Length: 364
Image 1 (cartoon, one colour):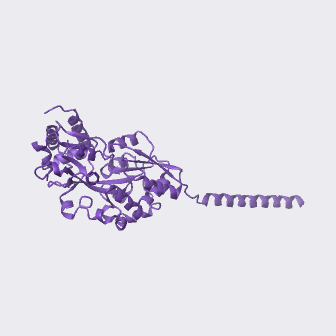
Image 2 (cartoon, one colour; image 1 turned 120 degrees about the vertical axis):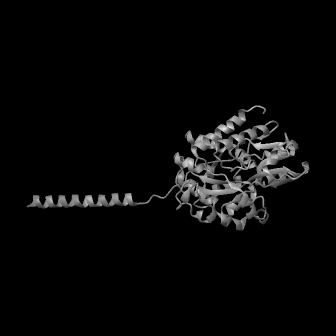
Image 3 (tube, rainbow, N blue to C red; image 1 turned 60 degrees about the vertical axis):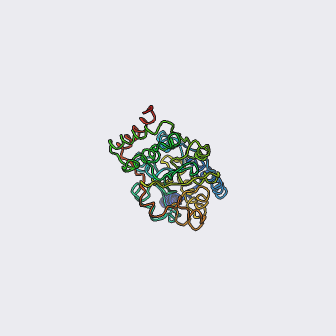
């Protein structure tokens, strides 16, 4: 009898112990461990594209250091990501997003961590290059036009085709790190689409570019305000450029104007992405959410002079910038402009071949 009671007690003890352990295990597995911020993230971007003061403000608020690494072209950035280099946030032109997503190079955004995405204008959401903004957040946008030394020309420059005017031979500059836009503006000068993949049209563009090559000035680093000293030298009177180049040249005291060519300016858009191999995705999303705060985003615009996709930021952007047609073009200019779109794989290969042949070409 006593043995039976002891047996029942032992069984009961075992059951109770099992239940307690089960509850403890359940409690442990159901507890949500809060996301932890990394000590450091790596931002991969054009040199000086985001002011250091903005990065310092994020560090002061979160104790997260932002290490800024730079590239000289989008192609270089993509090649490094393909090779497995580690970055947490990068700036990427919208036209590259479909290819990078297809190659598995991009993480999907978790918008629970980026509530300030609501500040992005509806005009920049859910666009063809990234439906649902799964892999990218619109950042800045603008036009590619012509920056002209107005005091060194006799008649107004109004068209892309003016780059080939004999009066400006040896006085034209292009960005060596922007092959796609250089080919695009040449296509536009011939009356073709900036996104043409027609081999015959691209061959015509190549031959036209080769005729421009003698005496052509190549601006090396798109991010280092190289255009201002190039224009200041007086050796160049017209260059492909951006509103930021125009503003920097004005600030340097040069007599310049920003021309939106009659054939149609080129439209570009930069986005923020998180590489798929980032080890700090949560911290990267917290950083992006910080950059989308209206006052923070406006602070970038007020220093860099590029239009923002952040609609809420307009309240904090300098009025002179909002009214500057070089930065925020009017509707008539935008209607004539053509956005640079993603190319097919075959089209990209063709553009790469065209650019390589241009670089290797001798005098026509």
